[in-house]
Image (tube, rainbow, N blue to C red; front, side, top):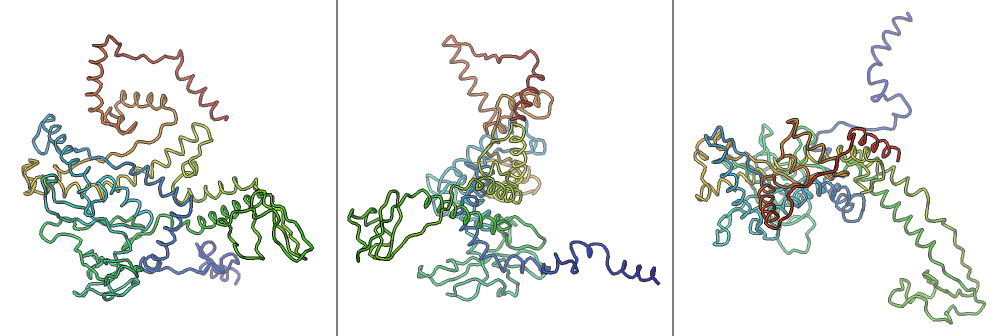
Length: 524
């Protein structure tokens, strides 16, 4: 009977029921959860998540640091085009391919470095990269629409990019109606989730864009929506780019980067403000004079200028200030608790929380706080770990934003005859061979440039990398441009009778020297 009972208990209670799925343990009884679909988990809460994420960016130092650090390292001044066509497939020699790539890069910068590439003429293409990426981090997603404008003598290309903030892509709910709804139906019967129209199979069909924000009460515009098909019916090329970090299958809208740590960042901000105010009050040495007379006027005059007073005109209001003197009224007495500030535990406590936040955002706290006090090995390990995330996001931005825009520009350039690419419009395979490119951004920082250069030299000598790649990784420069400039400089130095070679001092035992330095740094 005992064996039969044990088998029954084992069959009923096993696996996760004894751990994370337990409803019997006291620590788990109050944990109420439900498995919902992406729409209910994400779309229903997007307005709140966006507004709080923006508030942390505008008013929370740690939140702003997380978003700006990611934007600066991933995008920086903008990802630059490096054309890499498939010369073998296209039947071109190496020299012909290099010449074609150089012409395309020069022609592309004619458009990309001009503010006429922006539909609203505010930013060039490289600035738009940072705006779109930061908007995606802050709001969960961002959008870019392809538009065509009239060609002019100073801008031969009609392609324009119009960036749209996430709030404006929403489900239509009647003209003039403010506020956003999640679900809706298109005129053709397709479902609409948060402005994203899908068919019965769940495939993306179109986006619905409002002309005003949901809370724009003062614009005077009647709120209307425009339907933009995701892809051209005849070309198959995208009409709109949707930048979103997808986390779940069948997810339609993105989640702000700060969403997992919103509560923690808000509490850190509140705690920091409270500690700062306590320290300020503690630093204000204010004298209070108790009077037995009927008046509380200060015979010495006002200690704080009238225009700076908060309680101006209030006879019962007293203001503290550095060295201020206040006269109390009859039977009034002031009592101030000693806040004992600055708090010596403030810094280690906030650092511990930043470790917690940085782990969730994939940003080491040294980089989040811009404070490197560890050894060389520890600091380098933190940078390398952060750059895994930065490189992943950079490749994603290049694939989802830069490359589609480049391909659309290249199609126009070839159609106008400014670039020659035989077979571009006839065969998708040939088209892809002409469109291949790399997008290079800012290089990682170097904690010890000498060691970094020596490591790069060894990678090149062992065939693990190329000089061109190392130039990009070291300082974001172009190897061939460096070579041409060095030739010019060397000729100038030779004419001036100066030496063009520089010898680095060699150590008797380089390996032992480096090992000893690392040991000393690790001890510190």
